[in-house]
Image (tube, rainbow, N blue to C red; front, side, top):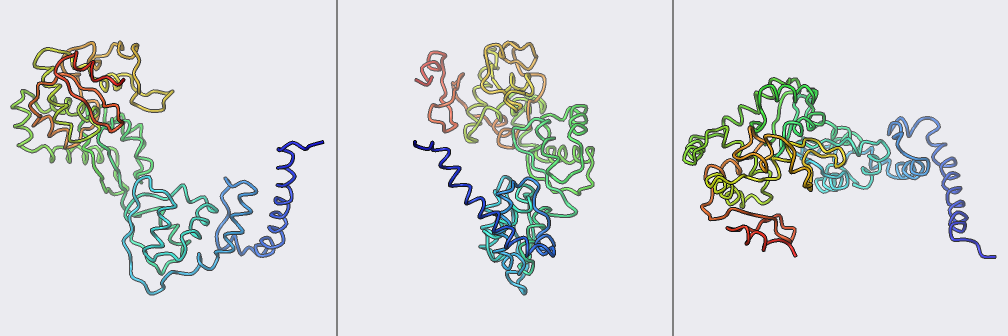
Length: 365
């Protein structure tokens, strides 16, 4: 009678598993019995399963010399930057390329063993090849012991800025920052950028810093541009926040701004999705603040931010616009366009149209 494939796999895997366990107890356990592995590398991550713990520990013992010996005991300090979202794999590879560690694979094994692979912080570091790989791994948890770095992205609403606080190094509760920013009507005035701040910065000082950066960025040239189009600063920030959320490609921002100016001048409603998304707030099902796609029911939400229902600009900005969006509002393109829609090639660009019939013709097939 033929055995099933699953039973055959089990029969094959059992000897392998038994061999790994035996190897662990015959080789690793005697070595670690006096506490050598734990003393050298610390305790293993509690998130490792039994098989993973065995295999990683065996690899760790194999790489022990490369992990505990500096790459260059007499080397100079080296600047090293980790980008937001950069993976431990690429970080390890670049550390080896710059001569800071001996073996990228060895470091990756240690990061998995210790669980530090999920705690590496983005930022600017100054590292020494006189440190061993374990010490360098520990250093990557804190780019600066006295400063914190907060990155505010263009197009973020206040709540999204607050979600960046826990990983920035600032001891500011997100809910406290949201409450203060709302009370101070700061939506739209938190200038996007990277901010290096003392870790002792509180919510009031952070808000003051972001607002001061915004004020500094608003030049007399921009103010004159806004005024020439009949907008005061607050109205310009509102329109720029809409342009910021609508544009994917920065060089289209002046075109998109021209569409909204043409609609405002002719008395048309703006009918722009981001204002509805802002009104809807957090979408639990999608786990995001900007509901996408919008349903027909969404477009009927009764809010002064719903530009499908209410004419003119909404009552306030919907996000923090970047300098490019602000400049697009100050110096828009001069076009006959009243409509735009996304192209069908996934490029993020738009097709612009003067009439509604042309707009319909630009729909994806």
